[in-house]
Length: 334
Image: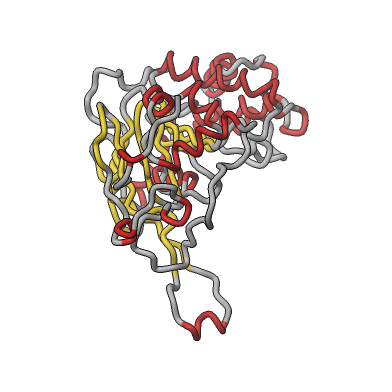
């Protein structure tokens, strides 16, 4: 298999700038008569880059916009504003043949391996289809490519004749990872790929991701709500809160010295058996027209000035950015 772009390349694999993904609100007649917003920004002015050979973790609670960003990177959602660049080329609004040509380079591993595979298709068909559709192999080359991929993801070659109902969750996820790899992509987005698996299987799949990323150097965006998973696998972590990026830093820095109060709350869940963040106040309501900090109603350090505008990202250390006016007021956990 062809090795992906080496780490020595300085150009980001993926660069996102001022990204906005907007969805319409479903409102009843009474709400429409009262007025108010007709849409909300699921992703609101987000910017970051994915570097060659790195694993970037996207973490946050359900509804924070993690999956929406992941799908926007692969152009499964059309951005309303901002830009998405793959290896320097603007793919934000590609269509037609240009979009089809970029598809093989950007692949996704979904959360539920069973629902992401066609129950009527064998493993061979699932892996052969992208090769043939994108002209990456002749019919005579297909089986050799499939056998190599199955070995790479830790499955016997004989599994290519099985159907989804004949495999376990871990085996299905290995097939899904193989399907993402078979086109030699430059970027893979993995959306909660171990959350549906038994605890005993999760470590094996995480180790598989680690081994594949180390051997092939593929850039990986790993979406997870589990900070333990992010700590184990990711080089950097980006923390999302209701459509906003609030902190991004190397994994070690996030755990050693988090600056945003929401990041600190998330880290507190590691000492609280993984329950939701212990935060007072109501979560941000995306249907409002609030212009200030989205974390204001739950923030222990909030001031009236925080309602003026959502804070911009500020450098607080080497490769460490945070969106908070009052980050100096808090103390990092020991």
